[in-house]
Length: 81
Length: 81
Image (cartoon, rainbow over all chains, first blue to last red; front, side, top):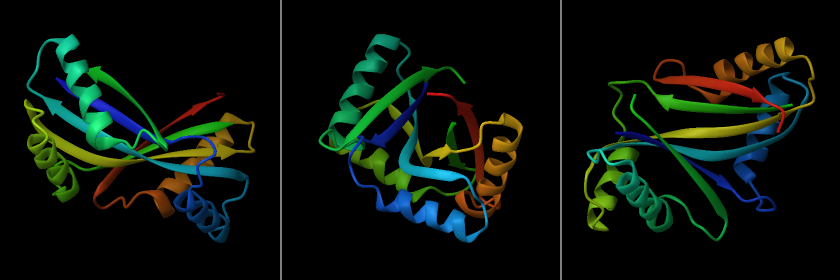
């Protein structure tokens, strides 16, 4: 079972990496970008077949390793593909 | 108009960061993870209101800055929220 985890910075948390991307886009002549925020995307392949247990494992992963709950939000979706 | 860009490594490209996450999950006692691949997630706020032109801008951003087309795939979705 495949899961897709997205980790994003909470609103109000400074994102220098996003600012750097926004500046670089301006330098490339791509106009009309008012804000950029960078996050992480993690694909996890689980041996688990039970969705409830897969969700419990994902919740632990996100809280203990993938995201810093102080400054980051996370969400995940389970899929078969 | 908000866009969400996801950049992932192509299949077959080594992902040491993903491997490190997989090992760390094992050390934390989270079993049943067979593979982890790490990618990037970028939220872009565009002033553009025309979807076709927003798509054209996103295509340029991905090709010229956000993704390395040699080793990475990208996809994006436009949304209002």
